[in-house]
Length: 400
Image (cartoon, rainbow, N blue to C red; front, side, top):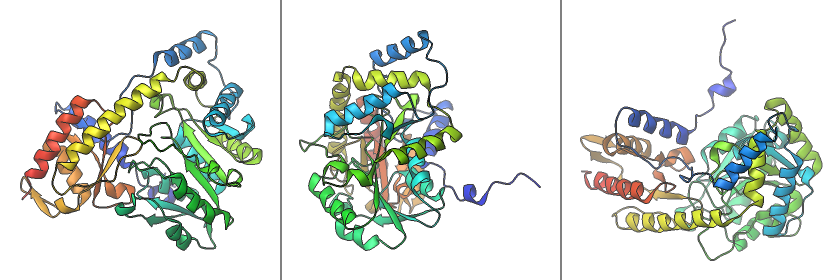
């Protein structure tokens, strides 16, 4: 029999963010000037003390297999951090270190969901969520949220989406792609629905340190008693410490049995995460944190600049960016127009024409379950942002 791709994988949608980034790199390699606002990747170098810890780990011979679920020292650092920041108490055995937060999410879904189960996902959502749910044989139930509410799920909409097949809710705050953040009170309203049911929650908290409001960040298990036993937390070092390529993320399970299941799965999939990266992650979590604040302040400066530029362009709107490093922009008034002789009716077309005509890479909102929108990442220099915003404004003003 010929080698044929399985039906499950044939149905899998490729990552739109990576696809747009690849297209941008292709054009750049061909000599085009490209302003890449597609990837959610800090443009800063990994802080020096973290890199030095990696070098030291290599020199000390930490270059071999580790325990599949991660080294005990890093697990202890993770639980210590969550205790210091949010008052949560977990034993290190509840932590599974993975090859990035995306891998951690896959592990959680694979261990939590059975074929036919439903997972509720508020839209707009990160591009990989629904596809990773489908890989388990479960069904992503997408609940659309309005821009007028900051793209946040309400308790009423959440309750209405629950069926006898519902197994869990997925939450990401601050949000990729919208940059909005749930308040403690908004999380409490969702928590009350959870506590009235037998549902679990997967809380993606990868952007918890990139917050730009005076309102403190609320980790989901802290907002109501009893939630800790229902919640799996996913986090990592990629965004906070500019360590995307180091590939270290983790899941914090509510009990040791669930953590063991994830560790057992990982032992068959990948074995351990990179040993050197694990030691670097310890230095990131336990070392000086002034680098985090320096990056956060620079992101905030860029956020305010992008918000001011977008506000000045007629017909564009987006919610207040309270966290992460994304602007999620409503394009609907600029669709159905002609750009340099090309009629554009869809957000995907709009993004491709913006890239082809003006050299600005972005990601179409339809990839996030929100047609008619576009995501711009401001995780790039002010110089690139200024040039990109000029190009976007020129592109929109050229429409007929």
